[in-house]
Image 1: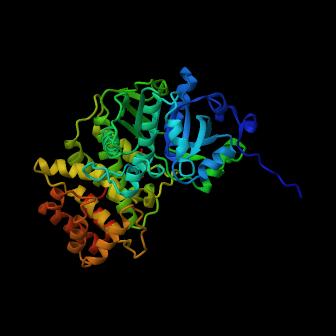
Image 2: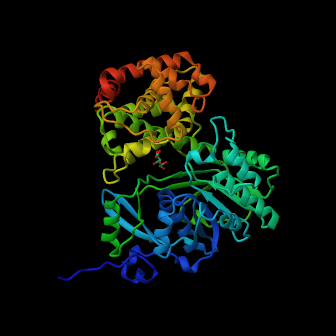
Image 3: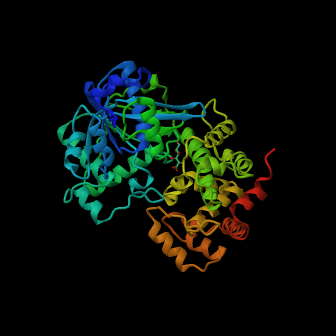
Length: 492
Ligand code: CS2
């Protein structure tokens, strides 16, 4: 019997793949100028694409030195593929894989932290980018760095750096000693004012290290956007079908992609603008627009959908009443808190965002978006609530989203199925839920009591709490699907 063996993706097999799927640059033909922390799917489906296009358009030594902070699985597979991988773009019209060649070098921080520190001190590296998720910044809700003994040891040099602040600060200190020149450190995570927050985290870490941050280090803020769910076997099959060779680490994304960047790069930058990025002097309005509209609606869809037993976002957004409910949440509660970027209509932005959730081919799971709620909600939802309360409003639907998260944290869907609490604060959340009386008021008061999530002002806000308890009671009594139906009405 004839056995067909498929070739794996690598430099040698590039000639076999269709012309439209070939990389724009070859990983062996570029030198690193950017060090990126976090080799997850989002980076590979977003900044790595912009960077590849920028190099193809304008040249420059801007290859990416990709660092995997902890797990080395993706890294090892990428190394086995000569640092090549593909991005499968999925829309209603089909799926289109394309190989990307931006990785000039790869490293593993957990097994070789000092190797990463040394690379940060290389004058050729002039930009650092990060996709490490909200929790890796080790910041509390008011922006204080959470310094424990381990981090202190990393920062003072008595332990090898393992955390993100540890790696950055040790790298920047080594860079200062080497006189390696100016550098921009760019957070590409979903944090409001991500550059300002990262700067504050690094400054506080420098204080612990007993050192002073150089003036030639900048922290541009950015807004990143593309829906990139976890890779599944199905995605690997789509990549194989489109490429004709096996890619073990493809990533998948929707057609929409956006990057808004504060243009403050003292050591230069790739021509990301030629790849479609928006360079601006003020990212804040873009960040607020995206976090408070898109990400908040995403979390709302994820928590309410998971409670109603929906596996994916497209299934959840189809729950009768949810779309009109989110339209109202955006128009009545979020938009009044925003100053939109020039030329942007936030209502239209919201409609486009919700439309993106309906893409049935993406398969983004509600459980994936539901994770790390304690880290995400402050940026996505609590800011809207705080601004509304300060202006004398009582945001009814934002309170429903908060109640949905609380009920999700309780661990059971409406049909009694267990829901996983994947969150860095899972321990304290679970303990609070278990100790509380199993009533809506008991649950609300236990979770509002967590200062790691809610500041004292929000936690002590009685009208808000009463409203959340009201929603918890409705969710308890009728379930999420019926609550949404009753509140959202029937879509016309
Ligand atoms: C999502 C985001 O997982 C989540 O919490 O809301 O990752 C979202 O898909 C991206 O921010 C879209 O740009």
